[in-house]
Amino acid sequence: MLTEERYRIILQRLQVSGIVKLQELVELLGTSESTVRRDLIDLESQHLLKRVHGGASLLHRRSEEPGMEEKTFKNVQQKNTVGRAAADQLRDGECIYIDAGTTTLAMIPFIEAQNITVVTNGLSHVEALVSKNIRAYLLGGMMKSHTKAVIGSIALQNMDNFRFDKAFIGTNGVNTEFGFTTPDPEEALIKRRARQLSERSYVLADASKFGEVAFAKLFDLKEATIITDSIPERWRKPIFEKTKIIEG
Image 1 (cartoon, rainbow, N blue to C red):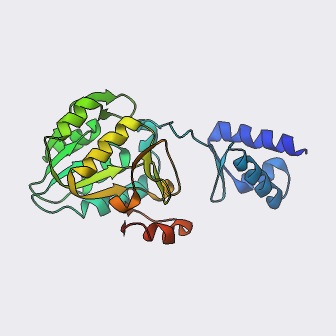
Image 2: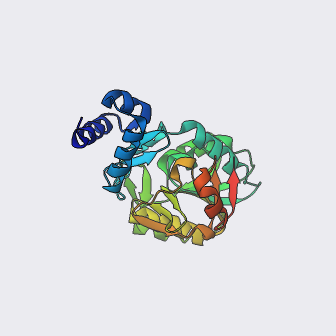
Image 3: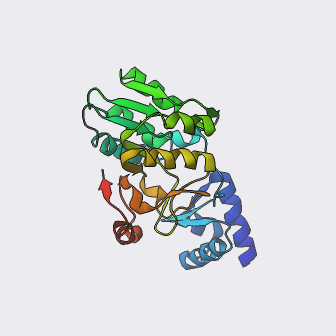
């Protein structure tokens, strides 16, 4: 089979499934594992896919953001591990900010601290907080339909009415060179302001976020403690050189 034909089949399979395993491609193409690895390296160099452990995945655009429904069912166990570790950082009587996003949402069921006050820009978050009888404020502003996050100038103005002991912030990417990033510049403004208004800030990121870079920068790694389920080995040393880590 010609190289170009293998490329076409690999990309077609990725369009269907979003992710494909190396062994699956070996069987599909009827070729050796080393040949498939070279094909994946070549396609990644052309920015047509992203190599992951044991296979490859579609390459998402930096400005492309999955919706709340799509993200809810991804890496559930890892997000719960991160959420539990984040909730453990809370102390009775604190005033905190919880950012929109599925990883930050995962911390709410594990909150045990008493008499806390929470400000959030996540519609799903305020519903979960109220259901636990936690005092909660939802920022006003423009609601993003697919992520259920409140953003915009009105939300930023609302934030200036508060000061936080701690902020728990979501991210789409954790990179030693580019810091924390997210696809939407307006959401980046909210996240950045939350960090500025907090005595201490945490960024919640499961292992899949390390090495990723999205469109809009939040802030540098040194400006927040990372809470994660685990750090991929290739990123462990450079991340530890940049900031503090809490592993769940």
